[in-house]
Image: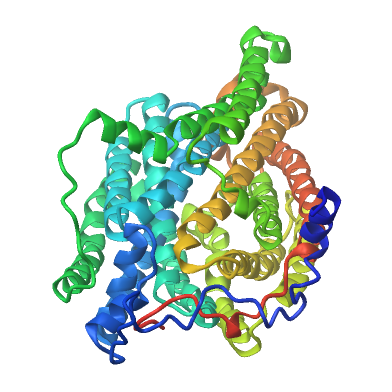
Amino acid sequence: MSISTKLRNFVMGDPSESDGDSDTHVVTNTETPKGDDTGRVYPEGSISDKAAQIDVAQRGVQNIQATTLTWTKTSLASLLILIWILFLTNGFRGSILASLVPYVTSDFQSHSLLTVIEIVAGAMVSAVYIPMAKLLDVWGRAEGFALMVAFTTLGMILMAVSQNLATFCAAQVFYSVGTNGLIYTVCVLAADVTDLRNRGLAFAFTSSPYMITAFAGSKAAEGFLLNVNWRWGFGAFAIIFPCVTAPLFAVLKLNEHKAKKQGLLVRESSGPITIGRVWRGVVDFDLLGVVLFAGGLTVFLLPFNLATSAPNGWSSDYIIAMIVVGLVVLVLFALHEIYLAPAPFLKQEYLMNRTVIFTCLLDATYQMSYYCWNSYFTSFLQVVSNLRVAEAGYVNSTFSVVSGFLLFCVGYLIRRTGHFKWLLFIAVPIYIFALGLMIHFRQPNQYIGYIVMCEIFISIGGSIITLVVQLAVLASVDHQHVAAVLSLLYISGGVGGAIGNTISGTIWTNTFEKGLVRYLPESAQGNLTSIYGNIVTQLAYPINSPERIGIQKAYGYAQTRMLAAGVGLMGLSLIWICFIKNLNVAKMKQTKGVVL
């Protein structure tokens, strides 16, 4: 086949495939022979029959398949309920700690470096998804889950005791890797125990706790700030999180043990740990690729946020050096993946799958757009809209409330129709329209109700997009590649978020301080540095005072440009969705055993 033919088939679709409805698309062979290579045929429902249904796959995939083949509906229900409780706790964690972070950075006189922390954490998170996928496939779902709980707990402990921004930033990396890895692992588990046609409803079920935590979490954050301190916010969850996650780990391991007792899983002795085995692990998990990717992305993106504070701005030696070194390292990463890596970071079969690649582009664009305007949103609500911490949290949690209701409707529609692509043609225009409206309404002296209205529209579009992109990539592969392809989606989203934070931070550092110089009265110019770097100082000026009005105008000046960037980027999504295949998930079979 010629290169031109391959390119045409990639973009337009192979003529031999049924695009559009794609009713003939098959994820796996659903008619597994009930026998073995000796010709014996086992009675349906026997242990040998179940063993024959387990794919020739990696250990982690075989573990979860054996688990679903042996467990009962009660075990399945227990797992889903425990996942719901975990998401409830995680929702409280996210709602509370997100409201506290601006006060943490302000304590260190570094409020405007908020996006710098997010860039570093985002780059590290993006880099570990592929090793995490391999960990889940090779080691097991339960073991990967436990490791992410450990990272999350360690990160929260370190944040609670941090005494400077550097320590807090390092802790944020552990925390972000842990929490994002935890959610990723649970999403893989949800895919393991559900059919494709019901997966939208399953994701809606796991997201529904956010309706509760949206309001309670914001109020709790205010309580920590007013009655204790921000450190106990992190410390409390360092205690709560391990307690909540332990039962879920136990359910997975107990049912895996049950599968072993029934003879579905046979383990050979792994032998002693040797240098050779350690080296094979380094190669299999492509740790060099992880380091090159995370380091290159971080070093390349950070200068865009730091340039304005450098001695000579963009001409500073270290700013130029970071950009050049970061770019060179990213090029080295690409060369390493193409020519050297025995187990590449990114698999070629995914990069040549049209639905996977354009869905990842859609998710990356969505995350870029979102983080362009959202980083300083709660600060804006407190300083410009004059809301308390809890009230700002309520507005910022609009997405969680709307998605909690809407995703059930979306999941049901996908279950009934079998298709999901048509929803994107509704969601993306709504999202772009709402962002455009927000440019006008996110200004001083605007009624807060209009901002909430825009947030509702943004939530409708955004929640549909986040559900559909997960379903689209999962529908494109068989079960043994679920963790890997989902990690590719999370990588694209993480990189998009890091780039979005970079754009946001660059706009903020180049507009907010200039806005303060322009709008602050002469009497407050001497305090400009403190105002720029500390939200507490900003809030200390009385409402309607000349200083507060000047700060509000500076916020509006910066926010307009951040939102405009988000709208412009999101326009690319209209192109990406045209190339995503219209798969019919109702006619696909991906999982086995007792599943939802």
